[in-house]
Length: 318
Image (tube, rainbow, N blue to C red; front, side, top):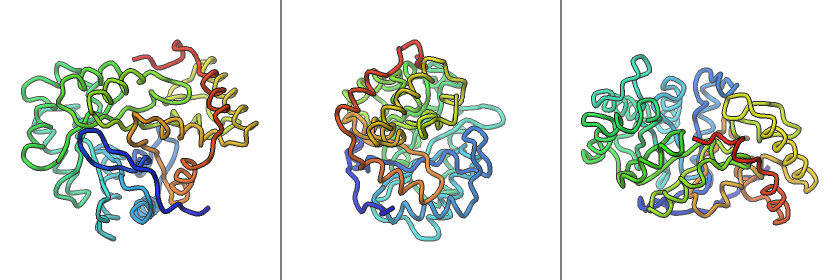
């Protein structure tokens, strides 16, 4: 498979940063990742990062708690080995204390310090608050809480822009509505079979917030057909959703299009979404994802896939 030399780019909302429409996702880059069903050797993760540095993707996403810190450490090994190419963006997220669950000011500063040390960086283009659903909106916004801490760290010069990243779409919309955030990451909620985040994406895009969409394979169920999983977003999927996946897979097969390519392009073709975070664990997977974004998919297949989307009752709906 030949790696493409270029990818389309888009401006990440009011950050003004120009990002490739595909972003390397590193949530599974730990010693072991049971939730993703993979084990990623250290050198393979480092080689994947190095491969990204040499290709058309210009952004990589990680977080303090991914792989208990191993994801950031492995990205940092690649940065130290080859240097970060000019214009390549590494973004990370502030995470709660893994032992206590604390999101207080001290933990947020410690989270950032750990991340910068692992990554071998002194500042970040975008720094996100991660998974605020664990404490809710009011606690997140309270004095001494994570949102105030994130804004303070930005003002101290550790990040150019700040963002919000999490699960429940209605909750994330409340954070977007504050006007504090420049970027948004939503996951598992805007895919071929789940449109929970459609309104959130609309609201964020209209407000000038850069939108990144992650986990477009729904935890892996949309990567192969015949499917090898009955789980969506790491939980048992409903019969309605499974039926939709099977029907979409069959439709793609009739058109000679891999289901995984349609699942990825569903996001990359959306003009509201600046970049799609795609989890990859090998250089070959990264090459496949890049190639999948360029595969020609006929309009009549898109129309058929849209008609096969399950009802709202099968979505996450949060």
